[in-house]
Length: 263
Image 1 (tube, rainbow, N blue to C red):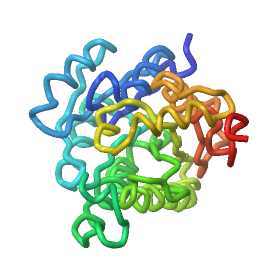
Image 2: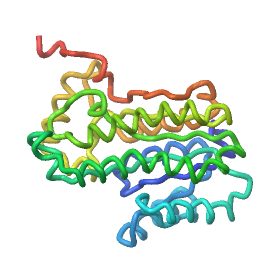
Image 3: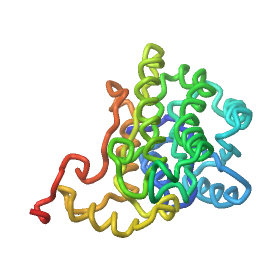
């Protein structure tokens, strides 16, 4: 029996079988969780539906996280199937205009780009908590989001997304403080660089992967399954005493300033 047996978890943000969200979904499925999914638009509907079927789920709902009405609708529909609440929500959604990720942060960041990056990448996590709160409260569930080291440090070609991730990490702590008295835990996984569809928008990503592999203590890059295992743990009863945390799953890269290879 897996450590997520009889747990019901909604995963928001699967885009392909290479996404970190899918690595989390697979890890949770292996540990016995029942899963539900959302898809952003009709273009992704068939892809997400097929992936959901591969982990024995028929619960797939449309959800553009920029719409409170669509977020509310997800929980309304999900409540018809899971009538006694949910055990977790995984938020794996991020966006920033690609042309604002590189070059000068000050010169290239626009008011609209800053707003949209924060709305989609950070506020949507708060919105999911708001609309899913009643269902989470029923089973003392957990909220999980995905972040990156660019929210802690200034990194090349990340710019406004770094500011949005910093907002997301701060929101994680405030949400943990707010929801903790109801038994709801809130955490984040800060994953190392992984070849996903989202990563394709970052300039010089291959060089970033190479540097991370050489500089990290474990001398490797992490996989979606490794990050997925951490996410599954954080949404399980094994992590019942953990909330407000940003857990790094990056082969230790965040912990060092220089690697042995650079000295």
